Length: 111
Image (tube, rainbow, N blue to C red):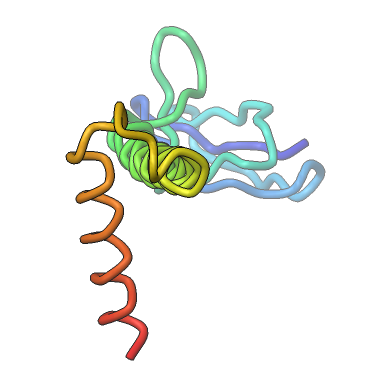
């Protein structure tokens, strides 16, 4: 557990519990989670919360990760379908063509 020094909804400093120091009456010390930093959190009527910009940045990173996972899943499914059913006349040429183009592009990147 840590302590955050707050002034006017702004977290000025975060210290370990027991390391607080005397401050002017306008400041106040509040208990906070170990993850709290002045750069990533703020104080509002709810309490100490993550800043909107921090949440948006983290969400963007998570969305990018999810996008990459989705691409890998689609690629895996396409590879599986073409390897198992590549000669099946009912398999749309589009699936076969995508996999061929993807394989050629991957081969070009690896060189």
